Length: 63
Image (cartoon, rainbow, N blue to C red):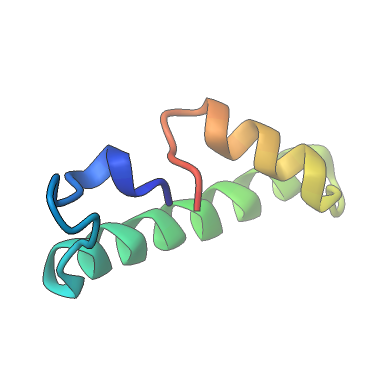
């Protein structure tokens, strides 16, 4: 996930884990659900690169 997308501290460049972790977990859960749905619609597995392109384009953020 790009740190800039969640509010990086402008002076130190670090993000407190308490702010980062819930957003990362939410994005992981979204991607799990999305991948299962896409593979069900496709009728089989999709490759990782195709999935990443769809996941990041579909209102997601880069992990």
